[in-house]
Amino acid sequence: MRATEILANEHSLILKALETFTIAKEKLENGDYPEATFFDKAVLFSKNFSDQFHHFKEEYLLFGLLAQKKDGALDLAMGALRYQHERNRLFIKNIEQSIPGYDPKNEITITTILENLAPYISILRRHIHQEDHLFFKLADQELTQAEHDSLTEQFLLEDSNAGARSTYKHHRDLVDEMRAML
Ligand SMILES: [Fe+2]
Ligand SMILES: [Fe+2]
Image (cartoon, rainbow, N blue to C red; front, side, top):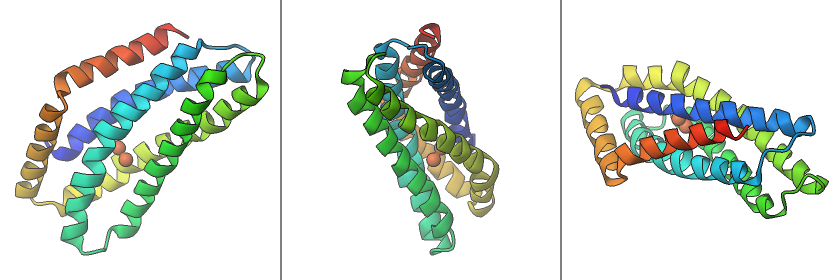
């Protein structure tokens, strides 16, 4: 399996989580209120799976290798993807901080959640689309088979250190739980 296929598979689960985030956003827009624990789960998924587990592989392993190999030629593209990771970390942090005050009567908190949730969903969808359709294709062309193999090995090593089998199952379950709450 190519290293980029592992990342694209992880995108499928992240997109499923984003579907539930979108339903929650639409509920808030229409005066319906998911339980606060929905947002707790959404923050956990985003921090632990999307950011730590997935973005670590991209930023530290794939981008690192491409930066060395291409000697700066892909810096602009990787810089933009990194910037989107950073913006999304900030949106999730803001959502996390507003959860303790979450209450249908607290319009300021609902506004804060919406003003962070909406761009989070939008930027992450665009980000995943760009990675799947442009950046990973570029990476596939640039890397030799030996580099692909070594990157895949590093991904699998990282995954086994992070207890990947249980990480995938735990986060698939988390998405099912979020969906069931809406
Ligand atoms: Fe990414
Ligand atoms: Fe990604």
